[in-house]
Image (cartoon, rainbow, N blue to C red; front, side, top):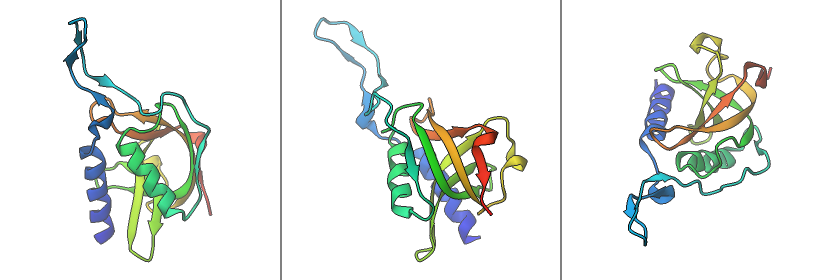
Length: 154
């Protein structure tokens, strides 16, 4: 029950958090024309593939925070060797567990064409190659993958 509550709270946090650091407010330009609010990615160009090794909780924590704040480019390639977590609401995430502290940190994962029944069971170790995608409504980034890019590790 404690794990489920932790995952639920993390999901709520991911959805509810957004940073205003990358948002341009509605203002007027020097010429007097209106400038509308728009997404201002902190990093305009795609970087090399981001890789997170199995058990690297700190790297996952830093990555997840940057995703919450929209600090990566849309379309950025990410490879994670981690654990799947399925929330009570049916959404999935991939992340790392800090066993000593009893914590899990992850980022939402959507596998194209999959329903909840297609994902590996909760806490299964998987390797995922995915792309970051921006949530238009809440401004955070999440991961999308094709089914062939999700590999269960025995």
